Image 1: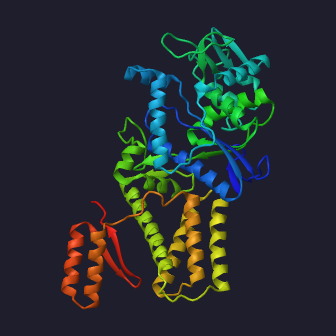
Image 2: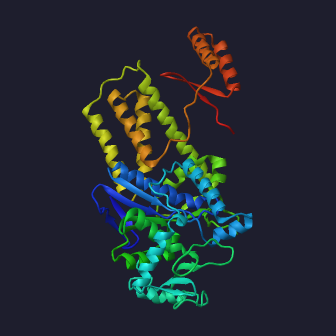
Image 3: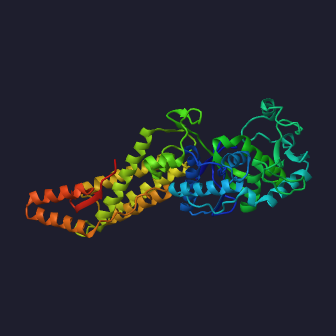
Amino acid sequence: MKIYNTLTREKEEFIPIKPAEARVYACGPTVYNYIHIGNARPMVIFDILRRYLEYRGYHVFFAQNFTDVDDKMIRRANEEGTTVAEVAEKYIAAYREDAKGLHVQEATFHPRATENIPDIIALIQSLEKKGYAYASEGDVYFRAHAFKEYGKLSHQPLEDLEAGARVDVSERKENPVDFALWKAAKPGEPSWESPWGKGRPGWHIECSAMARHFLGETIDIHGGGQDLIFPHHENEIAQSECANDVPFAHYWMHNGYINIDNRKMSKSLGNFFTVRDVAKLYGYEPIRFLMLSAQYRTPINYSDAVMEQSVAALDRLYHCKDALKDALQDTAAGLAETHEADTQALAAWKDKFDAAMDDDLNTADALSVLFELVKEINTRLAGGQATVGWLQGASALFGTFCEVLGLLYERKEQTIDSDVEALIEQRQQARKAKDFKTADSIRDELSARGIELKDTPQGVKWAYKKSE
C-alpha cells in the first residue's frame, strides 16, 4: 500500500512501526457547532483508511480528539448563555449522531482536551526545560526559531513565515511566529491550575499530548483536512519532536476541500450547509458516497445535481444487492456448478479493487471497480450465465467491497403485513388462471397503498414506492 506523504510530497510504501499494527491519529472537531459538509470529508476518509487497513490485516489503534475548550467555544457559551462544558456536551452528542449517520465507526480513543490537562502541562514543562518554550505574563510560548526544521511539513522557510506573521498579535512574544502552548486565564473563562498560574491549553499542544498518551511518541499516520497543514500540524510536529526527540509521525495525510456549486464554502456567501441539513434532503448515505467519489486529495464539488447522482448510484447498488439475494434464494433456477474460470475471474476483481485502494486510498477507482462488478453481475443474471459458485463468490465480493467502503447500511429490510402478502398471492393465482383483470385490479390496489410490484423470472418482487 502506498500513501502520499505531505511531509515528503511523494507516494511512499506504508511500512508500520510494528508489523500488522497501525497507529493513526486524525484531528477531530472543535465542538462549538454542528458539523458542516466540509467536516464530513475527513471523518469519512479516515474511517475508510481504518476500514481498509483492517481489511488488509492490520490491528488499528485509531484516535480522534474533541477540542472542548477554545475561543470559539467560549464565545458560543456566552451567546447561548450557558457554560463551555454544556456547549461541549451538546455538540459532541450531535457529532456522534452525525457520525453514526455517516456510518463512521467509533474511534478506539476519543480523548477530550479538558480530560488530559496533566499530560498537556507535562509536555509544556518538558519543552520549557529544554529551552523550546518560555513563560510570559502567565502565557507560555513555543520558540519557533529553536526548532531548525520548522516549516518542513508546509514546505515554507521560517523566514517567509516570519515575514507573513502579524507582529501585533501579542507583545508577550519574543518573536511573531512563536505560538501559544498555554494561555493565562481571563475573567469568566474555564481555567486550570498550572506552574505558570491558572490558564488553559493552546490549540496545538492538546493533539501532541493526546497522541503521545494514547498512541505513543511516534505514530504511523497523522491526518486531517488540508487546512490543518499550517499552522496546526506544523506546530504539532515542532512541539512533539522537540519534547520527545523522535519523529512525531511517519506519514501525513491531508484531504482536499469541498466546494459548493464550484465556489468555496463560506457563511458570508450563504452556501454553508451542515451535515444534518443535507441529510434531511438526501439521507446520510449519499453524503458518504459523495466523499468517496473522488480521490481524497482532490477537491470535491457539492451541488444538488451531484447529490442526486449519489442517490441514483446507491439505488443501483441496492438493486444489485437485492438481485443477488433473490438469485441465491431461488432454488428452481437450475444453475450449474462453479468452474475454475469463475474463481479466477472473481480473484481478478479483488485484485483490481485492492490495487485501487493500495494506490493512496483511491476510492474513486475502487468505486469504478465495484460498479464494473455490478454490471457483470447484472449481465450474467439477465443472460442466465451465472453459476451457483460464481453467484456465491460475486455476492461475497460485492459485500466485501461495500463493507470496506462503508456502503449499503442505511436502508433497512422492508416487511409487509400479512394482508398484503395475501393480496400478492391472490394476484399470482389470478395470473396463473389468466384472470388478468383481477390481477391488474390487485396491482392497482397495492399501488394505491404505496407498494410496487415487479414480475421477474424468479417470481414477483415488491417494494415500497419512493417518497417524492
